[in-house]
Image 1: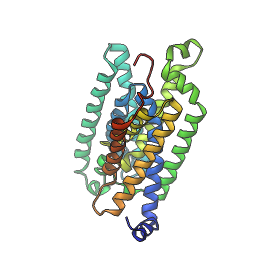
Image 2: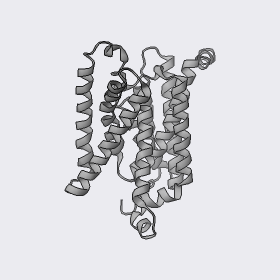
Image 3: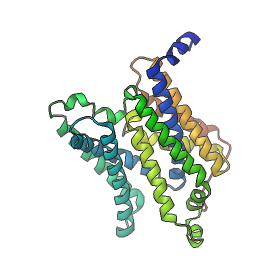
Image 4: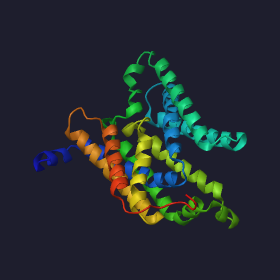
Length: 288
């Protein structure tokens, strides 16, 4: 891209807001996705993002109009509810966790689509842009949204750095951690909560359909290149940030190019290159 068009692009306040928001979101999703991939819970992010759709619609109904905080709060509640229900189904009914997650993924998304169809018939609902949460609309990102994303990124990455050794122990050897008096379930729940918050905040940028790819793809790429959890964690965050930034700038430079799908394509390309040319077996759990 010529330097002058790039300079003009970077002087556009809307582009800068979207790019910074995408970068922060990509870094956070990539870092938290590391634990989801290593704990064999890649489907967890997919389930929570798809199950967030009915929460978006319910938040719109409760607020009696488009209120981003209300819709994101609703998305967080229904996304976490799906994860919790899948966990209960796996523990109490003997269903495999992946099967339970898949069940609630489909159920939550189907419920969201039905509610969305019904709400769209109401006066004024068509202009609320609820359908934009399916694939995201990065251009709608405001400075207040950027501040929210920044605060969540700072909190999430700060907690990961502060509790890294506990998260590492819980991820690699939960039995040993439990025997040593570590509250394994508390740390597992905290990881799930942080992932859910990151997913919900990213819905406006990437959408419920594609958000899980931004969680998983950077971690898959980093796993092929890193030799330790620490290296994988920060490399995954870097891949996520790079993918989101490149996708955001590319969509701003090319008219009609959607940000969410472009971000996911860049992240997937990074994962494919790492899988093809990575020289390491990657970080693995014991027995994996």
